[in-house]
Image (tube, rainbow, N blue to C red; front, side, top):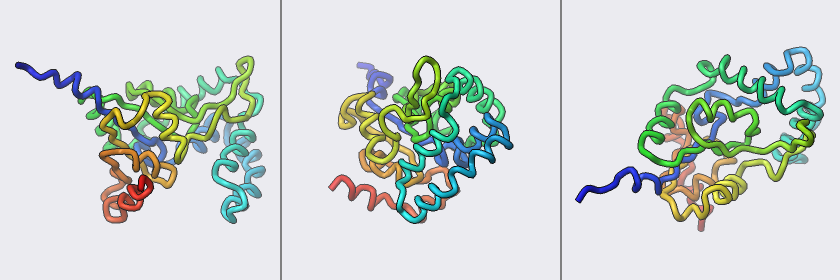
Length: 223
């Protein structure tokens, strides 16, 4: 009797963080510089100096700093304009931004028949062209839109740490129902990696992640 390997493979869920995992660096700040232009970007960036220093001093959380960043650049901006700029950014920066080894890994998971998704703290509106080009699904931080205009606020929660697991389960159901493979590179990915049967820490970072892997510590989150 023939075994339906394709149907079996659909029980696999393969989840990739985006920034620094399948890309060589952060994408959101470069996107803002590209979309608004260097002059406007620099002028607004000044407003983030004090919140950033407070974050370094642990008086402001990363989530709070992210909210200030989004409020500074995205308040009152037309959502369709952002979508257009995101598509242009993807086309222009694809080659210099994406890790070739990351692209191969994503394609391998797609070809295996697994459900494949990005799960990122970056705004979904910015990452959608990348997910579409990769041919995979997308979970990201949602920005609030009213009457087609961005309000400068996050809709729901910043998609990092425990929120990654919550968003994945909201989309796909209990993660225990899947064989979960997960790739990440920062503290914001720990909970997602802890939930995975196959966690990959900085897997595309030229071996550095393997030498300094915190997987044992990450797995301890479940205990």
